[in-house]
Length: 408
Image 1 (cartoon, helix red, strand yellow):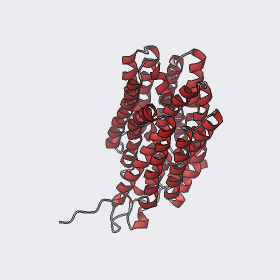
Image 2: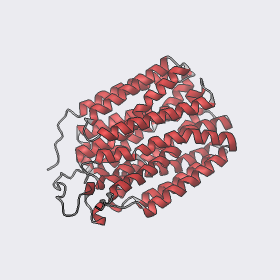
Image 3: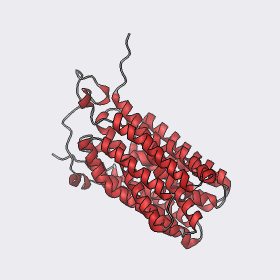
Image 4: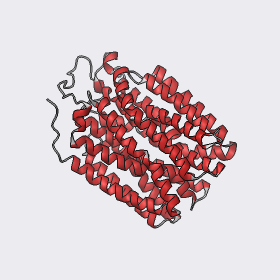
């Protein structure tokens, strides 16, 4: 008996997983390593270079609206391909920077690249391919982000130690091109209908998914408490999360050696992978708003512990506990928007939502950097981050209790 072919949507998930791996390894998780390496190599103030990381997030935020709409209209190939080129240029450039303005230019290119490889790009790419299993598909693709975090810090830190900062970033940039350009050219496709398929792998003769879902515009969606609560919650949650990840290497290096720092960052990423695996298993059956609140409260506990008791054992345990929340806080926002607003409107709506989230997120690196310089350490920043996460948990739960009235 012949086996049924694997639904091509799952190959799309695999391609998006690889794109997320490269984008997060060299973008999100790499930013903290670059920040530390540039400051150590040149003696520049950490607050000054943190501003370059903030630029990275601002640039990516501004691009998320056109990226979401563009992928929905034209497909993901051009976006992923251009993202790979921009990321490669930025990563290679950061290792050659000899003045602060060059660091800013490198992070600008990395911001363009990461926008094209972000959760928005991945979720919008997969939105037409899945209906019943949309939560699982996005969660599985997002495993690449955790895998990227697992390999990023050890490989970059060891490469910097053994062959130098410049050669390491050149190799990293070349790797991004070698992985992402073939994916864009040979694997990614626009919609299942273009291949004679239906979402979730339903046969063409099967019953199509309901087609009468309401069509939301950006304006009508932004008027809802549901979408505004997503922007506020994940803006705050991602701000304190990304800020911590950007400064994690510098923070841990105050108490741990290079090997211990790299292993702790890797353990954080492994915990994020575990959290994402659990979410992938249950994403289509759980209340995603309550799950978001639980993740934010766990992150608040982790920040509080590390801020009040900055001992090596607590830093390791706190980082691991925080890691369990990292992947889920990143992944849950598109699942909530996709579930509450539908597939047809997802690209445009989540593009504008993620733009707002990312603009708030961009404050994170400078938030930690300025407080660190002002108070001589990270303890105040961590306590404030915990308080903000508690606030965000309340907002996301409240937003789900207000009835959502679809447009006529």
